[in-house]
Image 1 (cartoon, rainbow, N blue to C red):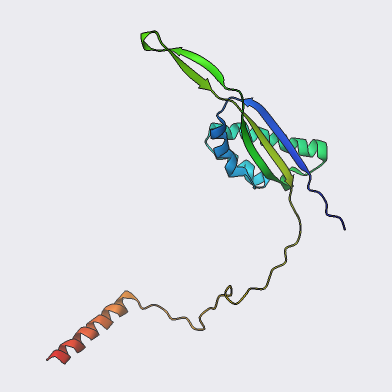
Image 2: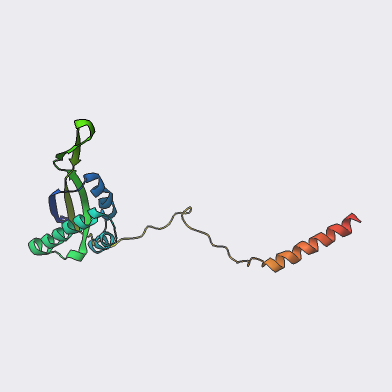
Length: 163
C-alpha cells in the first residue's frame, strides 16, 4: 500500500505594513496548531500582527476548501513564517537643519496548511523504570491538633526523664 501524500495549501500576504520581527512573535504561537485552535489564539492575541495573520489564515482555509475540497477544521498550520519586504524610507526634519531617517518596514506573511494525519497510535508497553509503583496502603497525615498533642506528650516525658 503506497503512502498517501499530505496535501499542502498556502496563502501569502505581501507588503504588509508591519515589522517582520513583530509578526514572527505571533506566528510562533500558531505554528503546529489545528486551524480552530489557531483561530482562537489569534482572536485573543492583542497584537496588531494577529489581525493580519488571521486574514492570511482565513485565506488559506478558503483556498483549501474551494480549490482542493478539504475540510477547513481538519487542517493543521504546518508552516508559518514572515519574510522581510522592502523598507519604505522617509525623512523627518530635525534640529539644526539636519534630517532624520525613518524606516517603515514591510513583510510578506506565509501560512501553509496541511492535513491531519489520522493514523491510530499503538501504545508501547512501559519499561521497568517508566512504570510507577503506587503504595499499597495510604497513611493519612496527622492534623495540627494531633501534632500538638504529640509534642506535649514528648515534652512531658523529657521533664520526667530529667528529674
